[in-house]
Image (cartoon, rainbow, N blue to C red; front, side, top):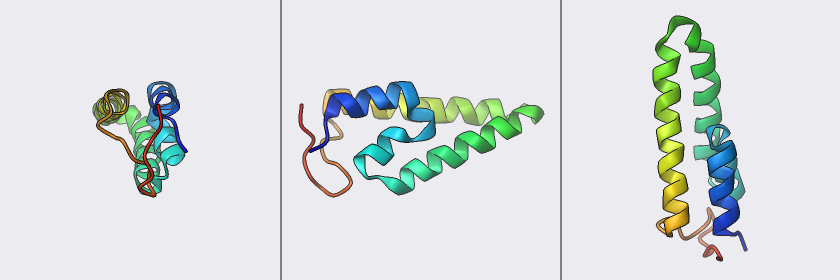
Length: 83
């Protein structure tokens, strides 16, 4: 079984790369976060990338809070997360 604490810490420290979503089995969300982060870094040369990086950071922060508070309580296969 997957652990809430591990997923939350992965979200806080490596969330921009979707590591917590890969850990939980949400592969599509993880790929979207990785691609979004890479594209945002590339677009930082034209300044719009900073806005999208901020948006992804907010998304990851919300997911980390949801993991720590128990609002995300199952993994990608529907199995409950353990404390």
